[in-house]
Structure formats: structure tokens, C-alpha cells
Image (cartoon, rainbow, N blue to C red; front, side):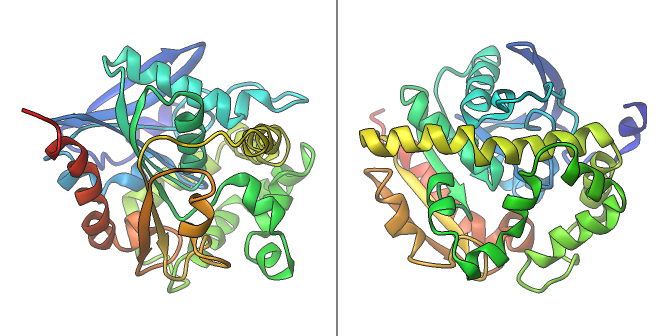
Length: 310
């Protein structure tokens, strides 16, 4: 872990924390002023994916930017037969605890990719904590698995690959982790290129993929996504449990989530108050087109606080 201290600091002026949350040590950065806003990253990245949005968001919000369990520099929960430590329900509990430990009983929330799955699970399981939620380039896990036709399967092949039983996918990735990581990043961008990624951010992503235990953790995240997460989503769909907080869906015009009916249609089956639209770019919008994301995201997040009585 020592070599990680040499990684570039992409959040100058922000504080660094390692906070124990229910026996999971969460590494996070905090900064800014205003109401609390939690930012959750996705695969195959870490908290640094928010670095282009953070300076502007920090003018309006107190930002909490953690690494998911097993990712970045957070601690690595043990793998298990039921994958429960990596369920989005468990991660949601961890981040509710993190925010409470930082003094935030309720907060707004933005999640990309896997972080988006933790986010909507948090909104379903802890409705009293979530004021507003935005998800970036995802549909619910339940919907992804239920629409897995040929076209979609080719687009998100990694869902089935990474969910294979341990240690098969981690062994394959570990044979050439840098090439696997770079291919994953560039193939999900609009321009099939790494150019949108800051070299410092790439250094962070590569550092994590040099650690076999983190490759295993990220595979376990997807195993949870193929089993326990689907069961939990199915229970909510069957019971018609709905997201009560206003939900903003943002997706890449050439991203992963737009491959069928519109994300607004899908999210409207899960939430009562849904808005949003496409932003020019691929899957990694916060790095491909941060200005486009901010143009849609800021009015949504600020609206909540602008309409409160004085």
C-alpha cells in the first residue's frame, strides 16, 4: 500500500480520511462548502474520476468523495460464497454510516456506474437519508439482466465475465491487467480513446489494477451484481417499492444505458419523480464531458436548496 502515497493529488485543498464504517475502512476526500453531496464512482475506477467536477461542485456543496469497498484505497472485504459483503445493500449501509460519521444525517447523492447502483439501493433502503439522487449512465441491475439480448450482451460482456466463479476472471485479468484496464476504459468512451482521462487519474486506476486483491474485489462486486443484487432488486420490483427522492438520470448519448428504451422510461418504473436526458459522450461522462454533466446536474442539485423556505 505504501506506493499509493506517491500517486498524484487530484483534489488540492481537500482533506483525506480513512474512516471505519462497520468494520470497513473507507478512504475518502472531503472539501467544499454548503449542503452535503456524496459522489460514488464506478468500475474500473476510483474516487479520482470526480476530479474534473469537484472544483465547481465544491463552490456549492460539501463534497464527500469515497472509494467503494475493495476499490481505490478503501479496505477490501473478504470474498464469500454469497458475495454479501459486496452487495449494493451492504455498500449502501456503509455509506450511510460514513455520512453519519461525518455529521450528515441526510444528503444528496450522485453515482456513476457501480456507484450508481449503490446510490439507487441507498435511496430504496434509506429513503429518510436521501434528499436527491442522480445516476449517471446506468439502468437498474434488474433491468440489465432482464434485457440481456445479443446486442446488449456484446455491449456489456464484462457483466457475465467478471461474475464467473473465483478465481477465473481475476486470473485472466492478472495476466495483463494494464491492457485489460486500458481496453475497458477506452472501449466505453465515445471516441474509443484514453484521451479524456487525465494522466494522474490513469495512474490511480493502474495502481489499483496492480494489486491482485483489488482485481478480486472488483470481480466480487460483479458476482454480487449477478446474484444477491438481482434478488434484492427483484424483491423491490415485486413489492413495487419505489424511490421517493427526486431522481435525475444522465446518460451518455453513445453510452451503455441508452441501448434500448430511454432511461427515463425505465427509471420511471422505479421512481416517482424522474427527469434527465442524454449528455454528449460515452460512458465516462464526468471525464469525457464534465461541462455537459455540470450543465444538467447543478440546476437539479441546487433546486432542492433554492426552494426551501428561508
